[in-house]
Length: 335
Image 1 (cartoon, helix red, strand yellow):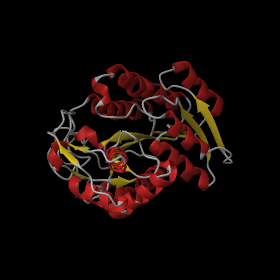
Image 2 (cartoon, rainbow, N blue to C red; image 1 turned 30 degrees about the vertical axis):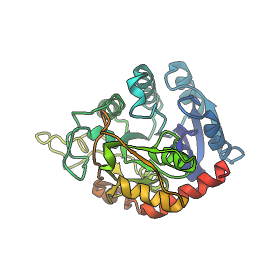
Image 3 (tube, one colour; image 1 turned 180 degrees about the vertical axis):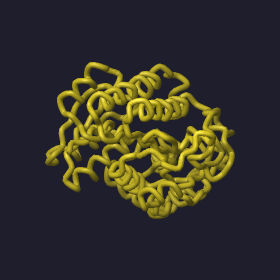
C-alpha cells in the first residue's frame, strides 16, 4: 500500500519517511527543495532515504497542479501524509504570496488528488499557531481558533477548514495534527534551538524575545513521528455522538478529526536555554528584547484526545531532547 508523503526533505517529513520505511511501507516522497533555508541540509536529509527499499522520490512543487495530478495518477497512493508547507511565522511578513501558493493552493491540489483517486486517509500538518489570541490553557482542539495572529497560522487554519469541507462533501477521511514547537536532530535552522546553538558556539549573543518570559510545549521529533504514524494507521471516521446544535471544531458528522501533538509539560524559555548551555558547556550572552509582533507568550498542549484515539502521549523530556540535538549538531557540523 503506497503512501504519498510530502515534504520528505523537510525536518518532520524526513523522520516520518524513515519510520514508515523501517516498518516495510512503500513511500512516494515529494519535495521541491525550496531555498527558504539551507538546501544542503535538505539534500543531506534526502540522502538518508537513498537506497532504502520502497522509497521513490519526486521533485515537484505543490503549487504545480499538473505535476500533483500526475503524481496521483501515476502512483495511485492509498494514503497521504501531507507535511510539506512554507514554514516560518515571520517570513510571511515579507513573502506572503509564497505562503498562499504553497499552503493554500498546494493543499487544494492535494485534496483534489485525494478526492479523485479514492485515497483512504489524508493526514495533514497544522500548527499550534492557529490558537492565536486564545489565552485559555492548555490549548484544546475544542477551543475556538478564529483569531490567528500571523499569515502562516491563517493558512493552516484555512487548511483545517478546507479539509473539513472535503470530508463533509466527498467523504475523504481527513485528520489534522497541530504540532507544538518541534525540535531535535536534523531540525530547521530558523528555529530557536538551532539559532541559539549556532550563536553560543560562535561566541555571539542570542536574541531572547519577550525578555525570556515565554513558556512552550517543546516537543521532541520522535514524539511527533510516533503521533503521525499512529494517526496515519487510524483513518478518521464520523463522530456518532455529534450533535448539530453543538458544533465542535474537533469532531462532527464528517470523517474528520483534529489532534494536538505536543508535550504536556510547559517549559520556560530561560530553562530551555539553561539546558542548552549545560549541554554545550558554554554560557550564552543574552540580548533581551520585547515580544515580537504575532508571537504568543505561552503555549501548552492538551493531548487528551490524541491519547484516547491512538494510545500515545509525547514522552521525551526536554533534558534528553536537547542533549540529543547537541550531539547531532556537533557531529553534523564538526564542532
